[in-house]
Length: 299
Image (cartoon, rainbow, N blue to C red; front, side, top):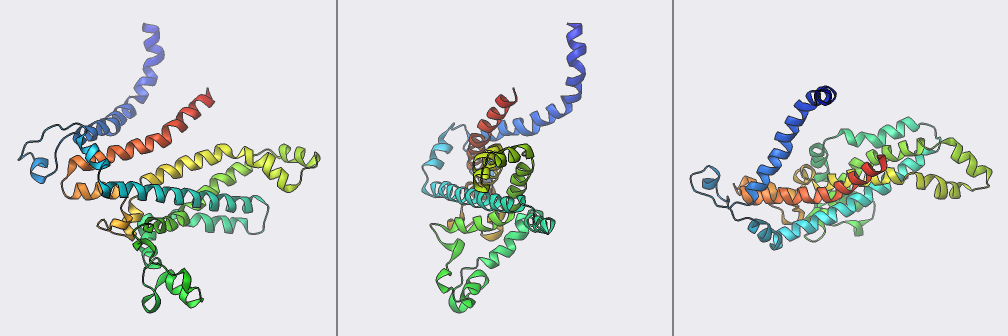
């Protein structure tokens, strides 16, 4: 027993502060949030304790999932995630593929592609709100004005004001902002492939396309999976960019994170906590399988 304590004690003491902080401020608050989501705290009076609250268990979840407005938010989140994922993965991979080949001024191009990452979503959202203005013809501004000036009037549209697909327009600035990050991941993957594999493929008579298709691209699958997980969980939690371009009251761009903000602002803590728990489950569905797979591979 004494030997075990001497061996395990120092590492535990070293980790104890972090474990306590994570236990209290992460898992403890998750438990509090879940507990709140099972109550009927929907008014300011209940929030302040002036009126009693009771436990309703999973009624809030059932009401939310059966509500048309929340279903619309989930649909918007799915559309946003699909467009965001596809755009960032394709653009980031293409940029990395181009930069993987030695070109003059590579550092300049790499800096240009990575620069949007340095801009906050709030700041870029303000600019993109103007670029994605829905005004057309005489009142056109932003991209619609550009299309009008270049004779591409048929491309003018109402962007994020479209009730059915407006949320996909907000994915455009998100793609612009994070494609450089995905490019950096893929570029690191390209540069991490041993030169011996390339030389062996060339000696076997492989063409450039065959080299990429059968040798290099398969080596990038772990990088692609990591990029999908990182970008996917970021899209599920999207809030600041959407709020900067649109408004909480706009039905066409509602997502669960915006719903949570609206519920919280109206002292509907129970529904706000329920939405937060649903988002946590969605993120866990994306992240946990990746962590399990990574852990098994390391073992």
